[in-house]
Length: 435
Image (cartoon, rainbow, N blue to C red; front, side, top):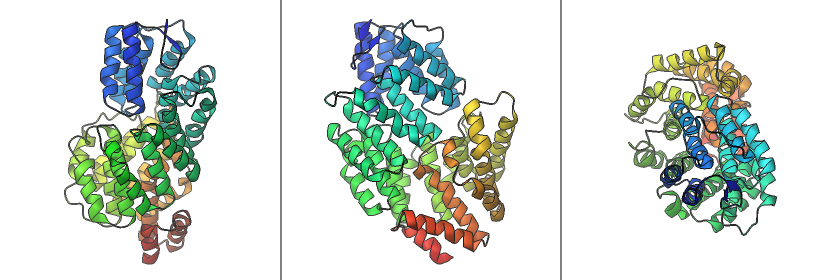
């Protein structure tokens, strides 16, 4: 067996290992070239387990069911006597079977033995994000860092991952420091740039957030998988200042382009922004319909509830209430099904389904029901994944529903909570004045 760039053994020819190492670099930088390099590694040596595992992970990390089904073909029939490679194959099998939490635990065990396994760290970090597990977003990386040489050429990417974990745990100063250190290592570390952007949003430093993203635009506006999402963050900064023109301009330029209406995660960003504008009674014209059509073309399997909730937003926004109700009906059936997908079923039953029901009630104008369903679980939404910033669209919906329902005292409490966390929030102050 040969060694990868972190010194760990792996099966495969020299050419396959070389392509695999290059693929890992592109993976950490969120560059689309990761696919071509992974395919090159597979072609060079089909018995290269780590290359096949990486290809399967790329499908799983899309968060879409057809890609998860397709991921199975890359590892079908593969075995390994090497404990690390076998651990990856086990992780992939659990994830494909719907046991996302089991896959996460297997990666934890794998990293306890091989803390320099950069693929396990990167994939595990994304899995923690999908599961909304802030503690492990931080902990998985923090546990591994002491085992790495700070002079290793990949070390900076770990700091970028650590930055996001710290931010999701509310350690905004430490997160910004780690993120900026990561950027100093790799100017193209768009995950670190994105993490620092999060810290500005969570602290209510919206003008500073725009300035920071503009200063890093040469990196995040390049060809990478986070271009749309980082654009979304900039639009949210504008929205917080009620600069609707700027938010809509970003939507038209990036979020609602033909390129960004292909993947569920990018479609979620577009819908999340348009829904926030809808809550502010901003006319978004015909922007909802292409997004709703894109969601309608997706596989209907209830695989990741975070995506389903954003599909519901798009359907309601486009005036397709019946289709939104149909998604909720599928979710209700999936929760009751004896062969429900393990982790997604748990997320739906505990928070995802109530939020879906609350959203459709909002679409019907039944604001009191929206509040009665969502208020009891408003602190439990992390179970269906995403970041604090992404899940805020549902918190905003609750506040606006409470205002529409005449539940002024509760709405004022929600406003005050927002202002306590973000004293500079123009949006929260405006909501408070309306009350």
